[in-house]
Length: 293
Image 1 (tube, rainbow, N blue to C red):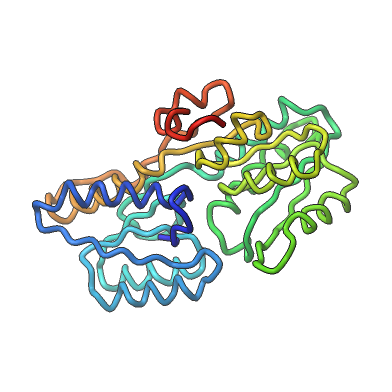
Image 2: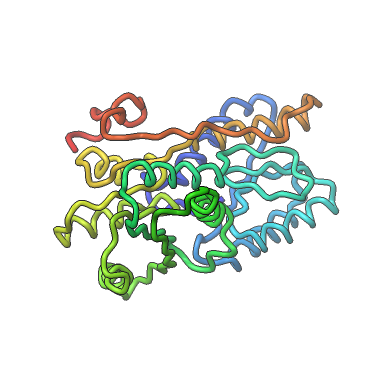
């Protein structure tokens, strides 16, 4: 799975689930070998995949973050008859044992519907993907496709003006100036949809620029996003159960390899809409855990 940049980052949550499952299965002699790749480097994914193959594991849990490299990896796993479980995003037309995660396409469709209901016609909506090689990143691309599909399928037309920008976060560049450029060339926007968990970066930008209200929607209940949701800068978060994904993926391999049980191929987790009003009812984000927002 991807590297965990800090304890509050999204990928710390499925990792927590994996570790919980490891503790539960320790009595059976199960050994879990964690390999983490850089989210900015497909080559890092390839190197970790080769290292995994060299160890000849009995099963693999992986996040197919980079679509092309993940397909090459699972073809090799297939050839070696090593079962594998996907978490976070899915790849069709392969021999996976199971997938555990959200339907990314439906997440994008849901995001589009929230914008459709909350913004008037002729509004400008900017879809932002933080990263590079968007076409090679699995679930953000599916979310974007689902978003556009919702509006394109409307018999009366989209009613909204949709734009997409791919922004790479470089250490020596001014991110806010980059966002300025993307918004200025559109003559302003009414809503922004961020396809991953970094919607808080846009919230920081909106606050720093003292901008007029912009409908802001993103993914995942990480601490930074929860803070801006609580203050009303972010309007909606579309959330999943990342700890559950890591936990259930390991248990699925255990059931298949050790207990010889039949397991479900597709295990979709819930798609939750979290707002300021219901944030405190998610126990992992109780205000007492983070102080005052």
